[in-house]
Image (cartoon, rainbow, N blue to C red; front, side, top):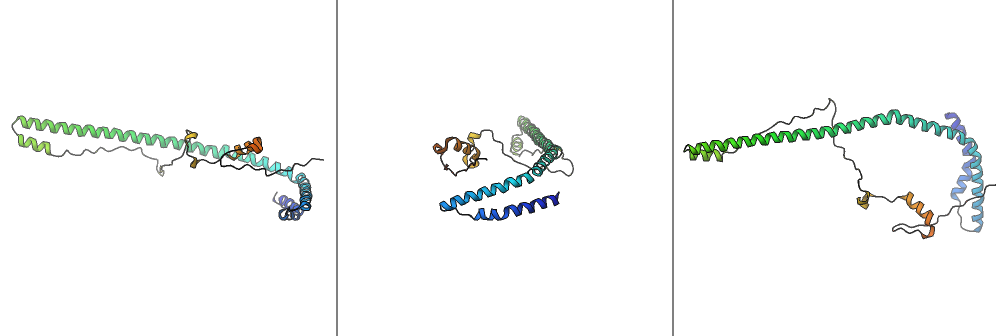
Length: 218
């Protein structure tokens, strides 16, 4: 196949090289060159039409094969890998939620234990005061509470894995997105220009007729 492509390229180069150099360098600056440019265009199109007969079929075959391979690759490579990514995102979301739940649960246990210690301290001070031990009761009340530490059980990750943050954007209200994060829709502007022609008007956009020549077929 590579040899066939090389032969086709050499033939195409012989046919098109000289005329393409001429077309690229040609300047239209008077009536004579205006007419001459049309002759060059006719010659180029004639050569293109001739080469299309030879290059068209293998190009179509290559395109068809390429599309088939892209579809095959997507089905058996891209889609399975995307499924893995989706599962990883689900695992990450669950682990984050579960870690938060366990942390909140541990904090609730810590607060409850801290309150129990404080209540016991108040009860002890009250009993001391009732027994006439006012100074000792005051000392108990003034003493700092012991800190309570509750270990938070973590969800263990499989060996060899590391979970890292991966923030991404998801638009939920396109109208609210600041302009600095948006770019003009050139396809929509192009359609509008063709529809409105000289009457087209959009702030920040210049509409101009760049011209197209349509040739009659024999």
